[in-house]
Image (cartoon, rainbow, N blue to C red; front, side, top):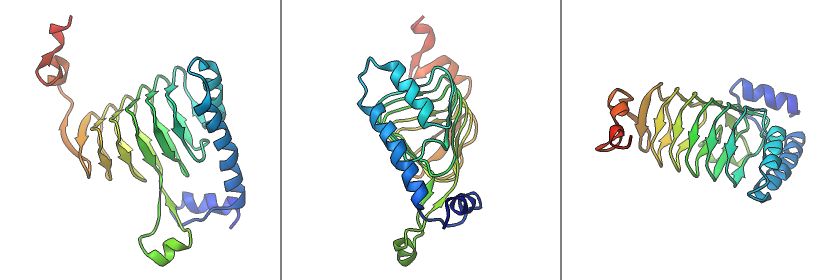
Length: 203
């Protein structure tokens, strides 16, 4: 399988396998990832430069705390003003689109790739990949896992530790394993910031 064939198979939703060209690209990106992770806290501009080299595109004022794990990088776009806390894992064999102004807790995993259940097929190294999209302003709680082919809507909130197996609509709070919507974001959330704590008591 050539690299072009591999990419065409992914885009068609077919099974694919690693190619030498693809593994060589991963090796180069992981060197950049190593530099990013080993940089000093004060080396902010160095990390910003590395992000521009690693990712397909990065908007202004994007912050990613170390450590970061990725495989491809060029498949990932991150919108301006997004904040990503430490421990992000990107299984990014296919497109990962992160919108503007998103907030990621610690230890989030975005996984575009899976393997067949059949053990004989899985032993061949076969994989499938489907894109992940995170809408503008979404908040992904600590330890959440987002699986292949998932779309998270604009301003949605994904509870900590959730495993997202289905799309989540805009302005929706969703939690659990598997992750399920529990309610829409509404006027209540303009009055209370946490349980019985009101905004007007802080102002």
